[in-house]
Image (cartoon, rainbow, N blue to C red; front, side, top):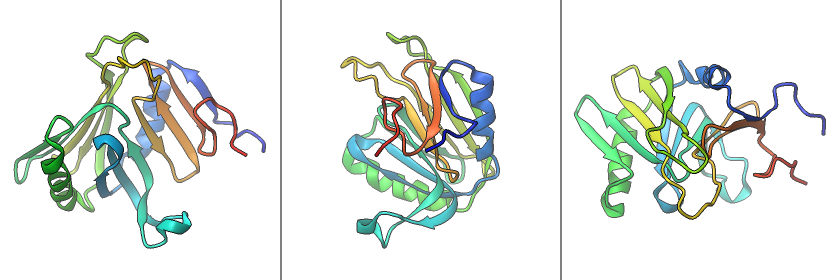
Length: 187
């Protein structure tokens, strides 16, 4: 399989990372859900059917943002609501569903990156903030990696079959989505 011209491996260029993330501006919120270990998955863009046979009745956004092991918050201004990864699991799922319902259809109006306040073995990571047209915001902040798992801090899957992997630390990659964690193409 030929490599796309826009493949980027292990970059620390935060300006270029910001340019890739600007594609989220104007994208409507589709839904948010909790996945494995309370990680937040945010669906943006157009609603598309799942391509997986077992999930034929499910749909997803054309952009899918996954928080991995990072801290995250969803804050709404109307009605005031703050939901975050530090909450108890039983309340969390219900609160994410409620916040998701209030955000459906609202477009992203700004995306910003910041240095994570977390000092890490691999250097500081990138915090990500999505701001929405109704004043709501979703923020993702990298956390410590005590188990030395080397997992991404957060990931973005795009409609053009690309995968943005940010972290651990300030390093990020932009690869075809059929590439595995080690940067090799899947069979």
